[in-house]
Image (cartoon, helix red, strand yellow):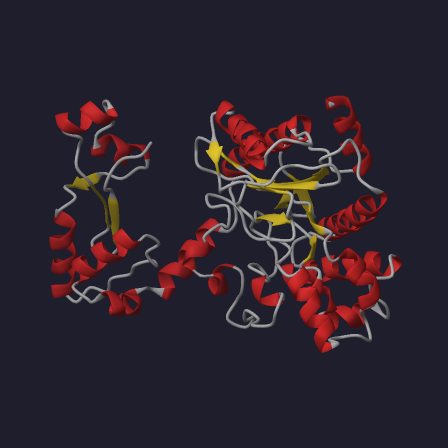
Length: 411
């Protein structure tokens, strides 16, 4: 329910929790219909006190006058930056100095491990997401436009009493990692990469990816590459457990990808040494996954260094590794995505070849044969348990043969 202009303050010094907002006027009701009062909203979350929205400025200034420390989280929206600047009476450029690292860390500690009732909500969102992907695999045909299939995917999210947890990625140009353009036609011989998730009525997110042929079946080359990515996903997810660093999950996924590429003669040499030298980043430029919950990239507005790393584990600046949103040790209650992929980016391949970069490991003559291959990604969502992990949501096919059987039945 979208209630305009709500804010909250936890006043630790005086043991108060206050929700600031204004009840809807008759002018508002004409546009929105009747809505719960601010007090009714406060009651649903156990907050006893409410005040008018405009009184928040006076409340903050009174606290400042008493030299009470004021803790704020990083504001995400521009309008909230302006409000906080006015309430705290600091310039926009100085607002970052008011952000509380202590509060950030405490919010992360509270949110990173999901309660059972949160897991239930995420399961629902992931199951709706699975239906979205199944619909895409059943609906898509050569000759359709990407936007037609994207519309079908969103239809399923709405029909499940949800919405989108992020803008749909649905593309025949899978080498572009976050390709939100939907203007291409599906042609014979194309693959369709769909990265889409539902947000359920409680605003919890799902985030799944599947890649399937626009035709009834993968070409032999497509199936080979698809199985390389699937093997990486299976290996990475089998490694999920409490205590293992997610950075190691990324490394293991990368090793498995290079093992598959070595069998296809795109790379050579010892694959662990190759990953150590970042050979995999020619084909796999992003991180293998991230936290998921109320945000699809859960809590990322609080800062990846705090959400996904620790004070001793710093975020890398190296190509490929710098895109890893989560690296720290996994705990029971973490919900994560795992999404290895292979991306053949012509501009990147050409640059590396021109530099003869890492040629002790890369067979550029073979890689060039795949320069227009595009990309493949497969993604599932997992809960870290006390002993290992649990895949979330209803079953969604991902074996190449299963996908081909579904595509054949759909035509």
